Length: 399
Image (cartoon, rainbow, N blue to C red; front, side, top):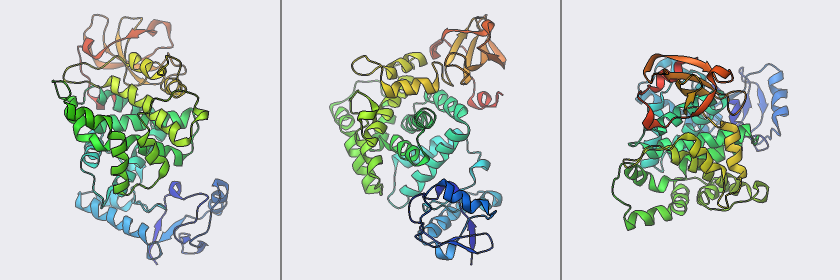
């Protein structure tokens, strides 16, 4: 018997268990095929003071995924401590204990770019699930730093634009759906996965267009126009079978305003992705243009095709605030600051000053509470007005 700790968040509630569930001492807790109906049933098991484990000799596909993850980590030079923290999951995807993962955002950008530019049928499911779990974990535990990082990177990135854009849209959607719509974790993963892979059929072209100075060619226009359908086909070939995920990808450019309650679940997801896609695209630079101010990007997602308030867009604005993390603002003190965290209201985020009232870089990032009248936000500042570039790691380090 070879017991491995199970990641509790991956246990499929309301569905048959894919393997035998055991305690840390090997005692049988539930047979393969047993259905844990809800979180209360799971809590009954946990209340006994047992750790939930899987015998890898009994776990089939999950064991093979677990071994594949160990092999990849060994080949990547991970420390023995990181390798020892790997847990097996009920979905067949092995993962590290993410509380100890300190992967940088530049590493995540590269990982997402490699996944979306050159997907492989052999390991796409494992790689996309692992990346999606990483992103959702960040959205659940550190949503403000996650938004700050991706909005900051999106305003500068042209080389790995497509992957950065996809991660931003995915995280915005998951944060909004979790905080405003109260969607459960399974829906968040479906939504986040669809947003992450919506443009997989044109990843390379998106990266090219971010640096292209001449107008679109007729061939490029054709690729853009049918990329949603082709992305669905690519994902199907790569092993994605979830009909909700696939339909959300296929419909993510549909322009269908109206109440969310009148839409199916995939259509609701597609609408959220569409609004977040508009927001994120306005923030991104091109060789021929500078990023749009964040408030203009928010406004573009807030109103629908009929110039009415869009329900999905309104949820986005209410969740992220008028000045989301990563936005640059001017204060009543005439200082320029970057938004670090959302505040008690949509207009009172926590910020750090990057330029003093004379327009000079401050050197040290000075935290301000915009709920105080002396540091009230009086307007937004576009990236082209900035005379300073602050590295992302410095922004994330400000408390």
